Structures are given as C-alpha cells and as structure tokens.
Image (tube, rainbow over all chains, first blue to last red; front, side, top):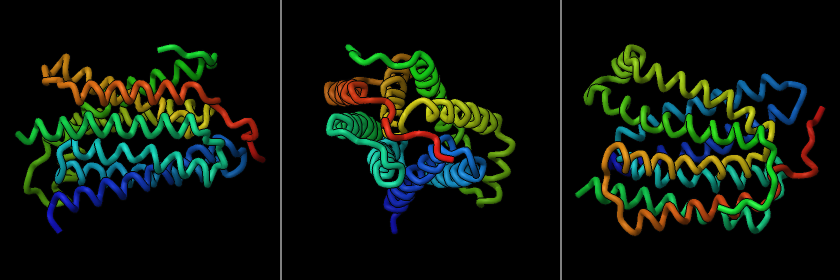
Length: 116
Length: 136
C-alpha cells in the first residue's frame, strides 16, 4: 500500500471514530447516570482519532487530509440520526452536503496549488 | 447572512468560541507536526511530542475545545452543532490568505460560499430535537 493510500485510509478511519466519539459525548450530556463513563469512552475514542490523524498528516498534505475529513459531517449526521434519534430535516441535510462540497472544493484546490 | 431564528445567546457564544479555538488548533497542530523528525521511530516521535512546546499548546487547545464542546452539546443537537462549527473552515481559509499571503482563486471562493450557504441552511432548522430530553 502506498503512503498516500495509507494516509487516506487513516483519515477515513478517523471520520468513523469521530462520529462514534461525538455520539458518546452527546450521550453524556443527555444522561444523568453513567455520565462519566460516556465522557471517558468518548475521550478515549477521540484521543485515538487524534493519534491516527497525526500519523495521517505525515503521509498526506493538510489540504488532502482536510478534504477527506470533511466527511466527518456525514458520519456525525448519520450517527446522530441512527444512535441519538435526532430529527434531521431535509434542510439540514442540504446544509451538510453543501458544507462537505464547499470544504472539498477549498481543500482540493489548496492541495493542488501546494503540489505545483 | 440572514438568520430568521432566534438562538439562545449562550449557544451563540459557545459556538463562536468553538470556531475560534478550532481555528487556532488546526494552524498550531500542522506547525507542530511539521517540526517532528522525519525518520524517527514511534518511540522517538512520542519523546519529541512530549518535549515540543507546540504539541503541549495543541494539547492545551484540545482541552479548552473539549470543555467548551460539552457546553455546546448541552445547548444543541450534535447534528446541528457540528456543521455550524465547520465555519472554522472559513476562518482557517481567510487566516491563511491574510497571514500567509496564500493565493485565492474562484474555485476556492466558490467553496467558501458553499460552506456559508450550507451553514445558513442549518441555521434555519431547530437547534434541538423537541423529544430529546435528559434521560435518567
């Protein structure tokens, strides 16, 4: 596996871990029992995500890493819907998709300019 | 940007702070990673991270971001707060242009505009799901 592919894989793993970690943190503010357990689990997952993201930045430009990690929003929105039963309206989905495309455009262009 | 809905002042304040801290975090984190030795073993990297003041600052910013983020989550849905705080993409972009004198082109400006329009769409939705109450 090339270093770039490894970097991409690591950032994709980070997007999934971000979704799970954020759901755990949100659970901690929704519940009054086992609150610290949810916080602890969320922090452990997000710390793991930070270590993996730091490694990914060694293989990828920040522009490329940023582009892929914008998929965090999709991952978090889907997990909020499925695991937290949050109401995701069409308006919210449109907003999330526009942000992901927008971040993708900015970061991809930055990555392209840096490579020249 | 026109926001029709009225959001609690506390939510606006903690969200703004989250964007501010995230912007600083992204810029400092990348500088810290660039300062790591290239061919070091994982153990040498851990030592370098622990001795590097930039990484200590990254950890400090992460701690601030964490406690502030819990406040954000107290006040809004996760699926509302996460996209709204992605406004930090816009602030990182403009800071790079202003401080680092990076070139800007039409495609990047289009991307920034899409992020802003996306956040506007999200701002038109309820910041909390009505049925979501603290469970015991």
